[in-house]
Structures are given as C-alpha cells and as structure tokens.
Image (cartoon, rainbow, N blue to C red; front, top):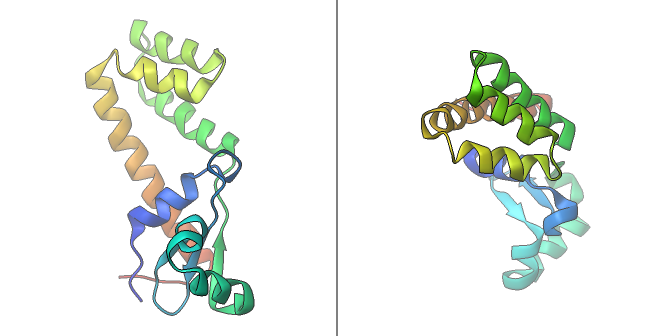
Length: 138
C-alpha cells in the first residue's frame, strides 16, 4: 500500500473543530480521504466510510498541545538572542500559533530552519501514526 505522507501530515495537522473536516485512511488503497471533499464530489464513497467502517481508519488530528510542543522543541534548538525572544513572546500572545508564524516572517533565515525542523518532526509523527496502525511503508 502506498500512503501519501504529505496528505497524512495535512490530516494530522488539521484542526477538525476549525475546518469542520474529518480525514480517513483507506486501508486497502492507502488513500487519505476528506469527508468534506467526498460529501461534495463522491457522496457514495462517504457512505462507504459510514457503512464499512472497518475498511477505514479515522485520522485523529493532533492536539494543540502537541503542535505547541513542536514549536517549543524548535525554540530549544535556537541560540539565546533577540530572534528567539521574539518567537517566545509570540507564543505567549493571543492566538499563539498565528503569532508564531507571523513572527517567523520577520526572520527569514530562522523561518527556513523552522520549516525544515517542522517537516522532519511531522514526518516522524506521521510514520509513528502509521506504525501504531500496523501500516508499514517502504
């Protein structure tokens, strides 16, 4: 089975209560399915998820505290300085995830480091999720 790891990461990072979507992994094909997309374009397939649930795995989004931990872990990799303090402060503001990303825009070289760190961490999380569901990919 071939699973698109980037689609799995997107599903893991979705906050269902914000975008009103649910994601599922088709155990036979490895496809990542969006309930919102299926409801609009393939309602029969959505019905299949509901009636043949054993063929699919619901993808539970990460909890906000897990995303927060990734940001904290990233900050731990930075040397003490004004840029790190800016990012730490952003995490304490209202809407910390948005504030963090806005603060990153002001420091492009650290922003690149963040995207690399985040991508690597999410790959690990996605592979762990697959292993927890006894799905092993090459």
